[in-house]
Image 1: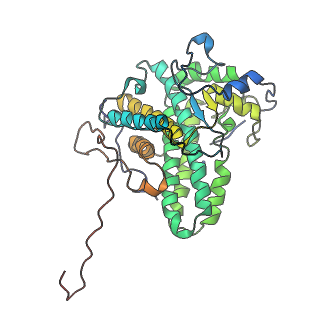
Image 2: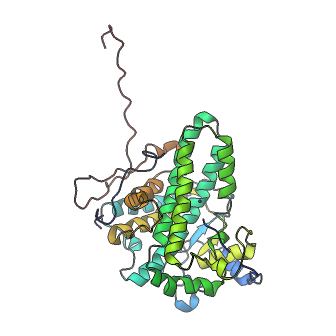
Image 3: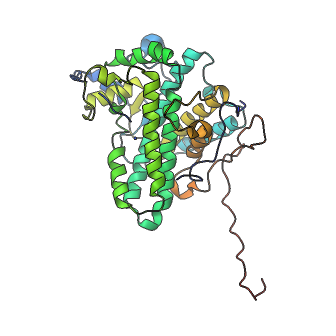
Amino acid sequence: MRLDSARVRVATPPGADARADASDGSTDVRADVSADVRNRARTDTPTDTPTDTREDARPDAGTAVPAHPPLVLPMPGQEQADCGHKGCEERLRGELAALRETLTGNPPAAYRAPAGEADRARHRWLTGHQAALPVAQLLTAALHALAAAPEEAAGRLITWAVALYDVDSVLSLYSGSCPPALYGSLVRPPAMAAHPALSGEWARDHAPVPQALRAAQDRHRAAPARDQLTRAVKDNLRVRMAVARRLVPEGAASLLQHTGRCPGHEPTEAEQDLYDVHFQVQRRPVCRSVCRAQLVGLLGRCVADIGAYGLGPVPDGAPERFGREALARLVAVAVCEGPPAFASQIPQPPSRTSPNPTLSPNPTLSPKPTPTPTPPKGRKA
């Protein structure tokens, strides 16, 4: 995989230059989603159990990409403990090793996107939406931490929240990067078959973010870095609106609007379960290492895909910087564990002089050395 600078250039990573889901909706939403659907969304099947990927075995319409592993997440707000299990830690190390291989231009087979445009459109739609869910959980936690943090600790938490908002923006562009014709013929029909009003509003992981954001902003009205967060939130909204306008030209009407539902109405639990089933998400407690391993794997698949095929044009109205910086934004979140180490874990950008730059095999930077202080005048060092 060569990262073609003509298609995607990796720019300064999050935090170095840092300075909201258009919701929609319908009238009567089906409340009779079966218990079977809810059970499938919350299956207790272990993550290492082989998944039946036959067409006739897929749950509902819209679980579109064969052999795509299910995403297993805890419910939002449920604690992710460090279990210390050797297998979980090895799984995380394996995903990080696969990401490093991807950054050198040799992604593992599991990371490679389909070559066909139609299959790749379905792959991006599913992979991008799955990756956005653990990102939303991390973002909610970061904003809650920011709301509780003293002023002197706000800067690093804001930098981390900005990085998460920005990677969510990149994932929105990635998910919706297919041509509108393919979206209309391949992506949207399965969603409508699952439910005519299926919407991103039904994603239970995104639901707590706005309230957490308000609490964080209220707590740090005068923080020097607050403008960075405001910019990231506004840019995230611009991206979502731009993607919607591009994919659904008839006024950017969403599935919810097509059924007449009013935006802002909280989804039912059954609707949230259906969203999980549609995007192959299972709910049960999992440890922090497994959650992170899954996120690294999903972001690694995005990196491999963009490196091979490009992100595609940034739609009108979306900030162009996300097209230039997509890979750096994805990798920065994939390689870091959280805000305390974030500043020392930003990925090394490729050389600008290379016609086809690749990212460094080691995607992290060592902490900058402490500069030697200048001695006062008149005193020898």
